[in-house]
Length: 374
Length: 167
Ligand code: SF4
Ligand code: SF4
Image 1 (tube, chains in turn blue, yellow):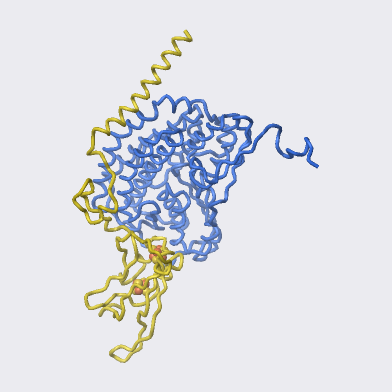
Image 2 (spheres, rainbow over the protein chains, first blue to last red):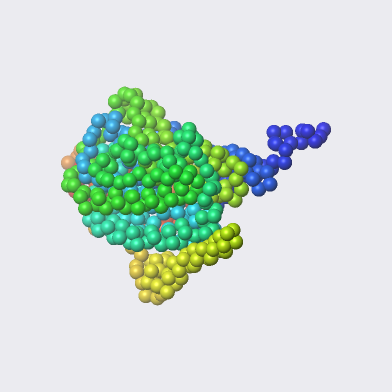
């Protein structure tokens, strides 16, 4: 019999369950957030993942080492080149190969271009989540220029597969340096427009300041890395802590903000685009001569053991863990994806906030769902 | 004090909105900043409207796997199957046959080079691995077809031969 007591089993009094997603424009993919709301206040959020689970980690066990690269693109497709690099660095670490400086420089430039492109897309979608549709066009317009650079050199725009274990698929295109310099010049002019359009906007500031606070301690215990962690004063930039590729040759600042709210995370990303441009400017004129790929054996076999390599992807720390039994396929591959850990902090950030703020908080976390589900 | 703050807040807010509008309206009066391309009109590069620039893909663009043939209908594929082995998802099937050449020796030759476009992830490993450079990517990106079977392609031409001198 339905009585007053058992009608709401498991649901606290007056709490209402609202499903956000899996098909919601502001979740940027197929993520389902089960929100318990009381009036307009969010009381609890339970993310349900797995809608785009493809079993990539399992698939890698059947593939050879060079073949796995094309799957790493398909995790966080907005930082595809950084994921490629992480995987290739891990394989090179296992084989104890030191790649030439040319490869390191090109990889670093490509990673930073990827980071700018990714932050641009984040900026578009963040603006759009808050209702500023103009941002979407401006961000995509500028991102297109980077994608053209990628297309000319790597042959592909989004799913790039440019790195291989031991080097790169092809040398840079003769136009590459010229185009990158043109882009930097152009984007230095355009980035202040972004600030003028959105950063100073009163509606955006009201919706972001003081919303979605997470303390440094919480950020560390949830493993929130990348710009989201650095917005809470958590200094976690792998490029600084454990320099890989050509990051040891360049000077740049780790962008840190201590407010811990949505606006701080926003500002970290905006400043990171400037830092990325600084890094590219230091490298682009000094690409040393050398081979674009080291000589590798026809069949790559890693020596038995366990290997781990971490890099700073656009959304946080991306790690690749390979267990090898000495075969031509890995025994086990695990990807430490930044978005999964960042998502786990969503509940802490959005608790006792308005349901509309959940959109802003989610936008500031910048999650990419294929990276969460793998 | 509260009232002054409130009123100045309103003016600051309106000013910030005007700032944003200054950006957007500046683009209204600068038509040369328009980046929109008129696809499909610009495929042939017609002269009307803003789509004067012909749509051209970059030469390295990985659109679709092709096997170039010479004018005598000869290709360079020796049917070794290395590309098939390197492909991560079984997109390529190299079907070979035994042929007797002029010296009377039996040799493996290409019968059919089957390429399942629908399965290809455009990673480029096959082209990189091919020892004789028999395959490459074309710039064609318009892959839409009405029937899924049309995505299974045979890359070598009818009656094509192995180019002389390629092993
Ligand atoms: S591009 Fe990659 S997926 Fe496509 S046929 Fe070549 S190896 Fe296979
Ligand atoms: S295309 Fe190249 S790799 Fe593939 S079977 Fe022919 S010769 Fe061998």
